Length: 83
Image (cartoon, rainbow, N blue to C red; front, side, top):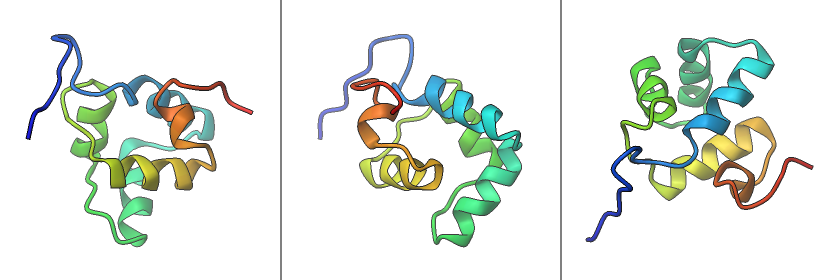
């Protein structure tokens, strides 16, 4: 498996995740708890590390986050704007 890293961040969704979370006025801990109820293994540290770009994010987690916020995966990935 080859993992690409631009040297600054291990993911490209961190900034948008933080924006979406803050727009809803929820904490990292609350977001993690809500994603856990949907069957995903998130903690507040996981959310923090994603937002800081210190953690790789698998595709299934991108889909879970996109579904939670009712946005597309493309939006999280910076491919398209929010509709």
